[in-house]
Picture 1 (cartoon, one colour):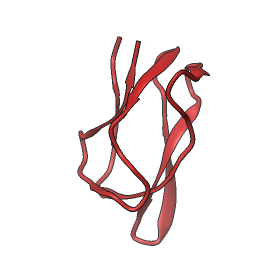
Picture 2 (picture 1 turned 120 degrees about the vertical axis):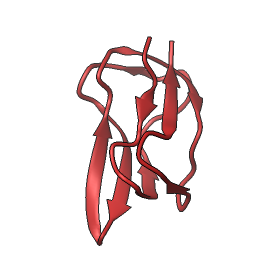
Picture 3 (picture 1 turned 180 degrees about the horizontal axis):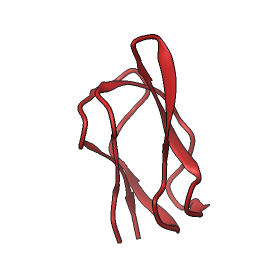
Length: 70
């Protein structure tokens, strides 16, 4: 199952999920801040959150894995 990756370079503004949460396709898992805009990162597939690889305030690059699903 694919992981949820950052689609832009920015800062993690808020993590919307916790390990063990069930999510559906289209659910917001992380909100990134870039150029003073908040951008939701949505799951492309349903699954269960296995691991969160980012924390609020962390700088991330486009393509970085933010959340691992199973």
